[in-house]
Each structure stands twice: as C-alpha cells, then as structure tokens.
Length: 101
Image (cartoon, rainbow, N blue to C red; front, top):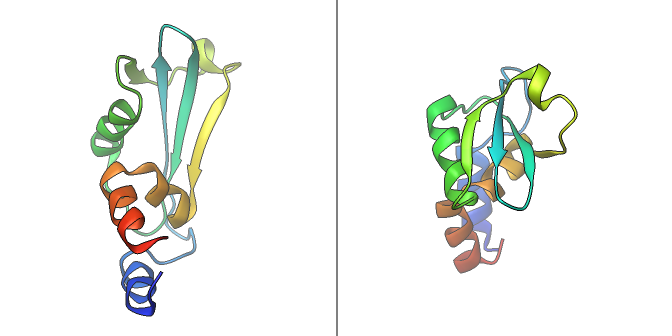
C-alpha cells in the first residue's frame, strides 16, 4: 500500500478503542446460524449501518438483533479495531483491493 493510502486510512480510522461500542447481530442462513459482533473505535458508523453491512456480507440470510438467550451459544464472527471494521465493509475492501492493503 502506498504511504499516502496508509496516512489516509490512519487519519480516517484511528486506532484505539477509548470510545468503543459493541454491536451484535443474529445472522440466520440456510447453512448455519451465527452472531456478528462489531467493535467500533472512535469512528462509529452506527447500529443500522452495521446491520446493513452485515446483511450485505451475508446475502440471502436474515439479520436481526442479538438476543442473549437465543444467541448466547452460537459461533461469533468478530470485527474489531479499525482494521477489522475496515475489512468488514465491502466498499473499503474494494479500495483495499486497488491499493493492495
């Protein structure tokens, strides 16, 4: 990745989780049920945006709010820190493909 691209990503997505928020969603697919957990940092796109991204990453699957009684024993796909959140966002993955992140 070029130095300019690294600097741009560092500016847009600072590391650290001083203001982290966790969002969890139940994902129901034909082949499996699981939980997706997003741990945001200081940049928080919001619950509804992350719900849409979760649905985009898992086409033909239902995405609902997490329920600890129903979902407590399900496997969890975690996206945490700025790099994990970036890798989970499809538009950013396209940019990373271009800049070879």
